[in-house]
Length: 240
View 1 (tube, rainbow, N blue to C red):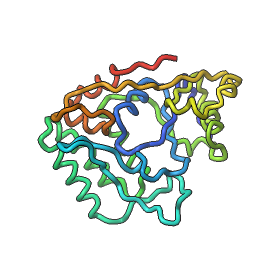
View 2: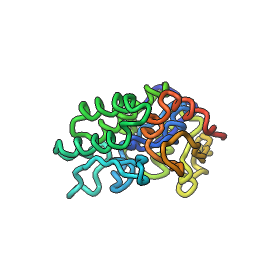
View 3: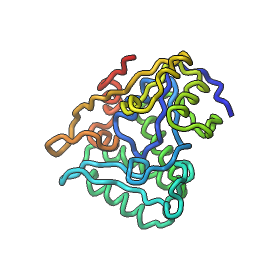
View 4: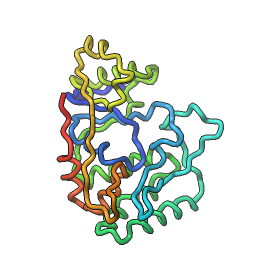
């Protein structure tokens, strides 16, 4: 199904698990955020886990998924292990490390309902968490699944270009790694300008020192509450 809403600034990103602050900074500055759910799932990356700040340093918060015999499966097809024990461990880890944080109740209100309602789909869980976070932050950017755009036959730079064309983008905002694989001449020929999200991470209040950047957005919410929305918006501006 073709996307009919024309957008000026578009960005495209895998729907990661409880993404970091930069994910939402980029979302807040775009007209359309495309969830890249039709690409191969990456093991030991950020699609089924993310980092939280603990007294000892950083710790991974992980959702166990089924990957045996499914090496080439798409992100949209990844199933979560059907075992209630992981949820108890997952929530126990969150509570142990953040229950004394000033905005622990806000974290609970975001994470707990999403875990209960997601079923066994990693995509559904990630989207539920992202949608809950962006609602909390007041980010109303339009979103769409790449799998709904009829572009599954493309890959790499061609996939990004086709999504940009289908969504009517005049500007595509890439992560820094886009410099290594995007075929810029083809974007130029299509009349699409390319910019890069060269994010500079801000510092915010953490209970331990030194400050550790690149944690899940949950870390900022637990420590800063609703002020996280201001931090997300003000910390970095994209220039094209």
